[in-house]
Length: 543
Ligand code: XMP
Image 1 (cartoon, rainbow, N blue to C red):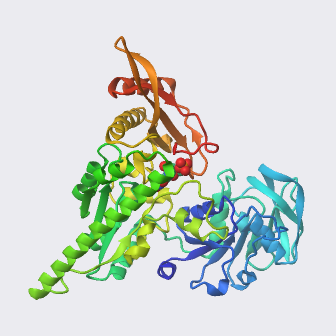
Image 2: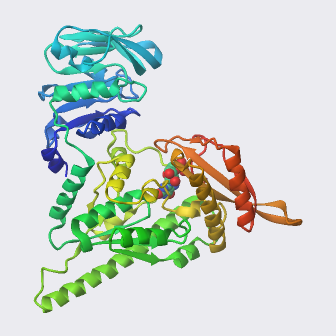
């Protein structure tokens, strides 16, 4: 896969030293229509099976003095391509070229003004081309250069950092102490554009070319008769992946959606309509809601709910895959009998997954995956048992790129922009036992909540909004009668990466409308509360 992409596009290699901003470097390159790939900083250059046009070394939470500080393979400096070091990356360049790095007396965090030094040498000045004499940048570092590395010159300094930006006198090596990849550095895009120019990269990576190339790649991989099966959740990732697969191999792709009984209201119906009716994807919806709900009855522990749903999902999906496989075999046998072999049937050899780039990054990070707070359920567990080969058309993309792709592929905006929905669905939003009446109650409240925030025009401002059904009863008075009913909590989170989040500051009138409608229209609920917790210390879901 990597080789195919790299033979088609000029690419930049990003070596990740674990900075929280590393993935933003990837974004900045893509925005310039340049394909790039991020690998752990421990990558041996001799093991690369492609030739990058340039290398970017990211920042890092480490100090170069830490015993476990990650080190770049020095071979990166003899590849004959430009290298840009950002923050820790600059220190790595210095370290490898005889410079010194000192711990700074205080951590420098925030805005700084870089004075741009024009050396008069076009090669050294290339990084800051088009910038004025001063630029606002974002600093976040502990250590900084205390001595210039051999054969380097200063191309920028701040009041506290004399070597805020450096360039090699004759080689295309540049280092910056600040973070050009974050939006707080307004000249960042220009700086990356300049570096890309130094690398001599063609800028031809677009979503349209991505679709064409991906479709061609899938066709070649699957062959003229191979079949692909995929699980569809109703979320944007699996829907976009399914649409690309359909574009590539049409009827030989079969999508399966498992209705686990804890979906949002009418979700299975909507996804069925969108994929099969509007987009022509071959889709079977398996209604396994009774099975799931019978297994969830009386279960309150969140991790048990997740495990039950994950395992039952695998069981149902595998059974459906076997049924489809048997159907394909029968078709193949019939085709052979009628002398049509090779035209109509083939085996299910591949499994489609909507894995995104951040998932890939997490699994390749030299730091290893982060601590498990919750066991997120995905279809990864299917692989070992099923012996199907994996196809991941979106593994190079970020979420907003997948959304752009979805729009290009004709997936309706309300589905493309939909908030994420967890695999265990409403089961982790019903805090007590999960029963059909409790699911129905939550579905109704959730529908009203989402309808109102869409109507108020704030849905796209919120990253994830949903209702939660609390396992408590409260006294109320409705129609002159005492009630003793349940409580709905409203959750709305704003986040970019879902690792941290803040609560959304709703307009009071909107809250009043949502609350009124829920208590009036959902029988069994007499009280609505608002969740005003950030993550951390809370998480986005309640379970
Ligand atoms: P938390 O609650 O961990 O959620 O702050 C972060 C994001 O992950 C989603 N989430 C899940 N997604 N299976 C999933 O597929 C899960 O078990 C699961 N738990 C949380 C959550 O909806 C949010 O988008």
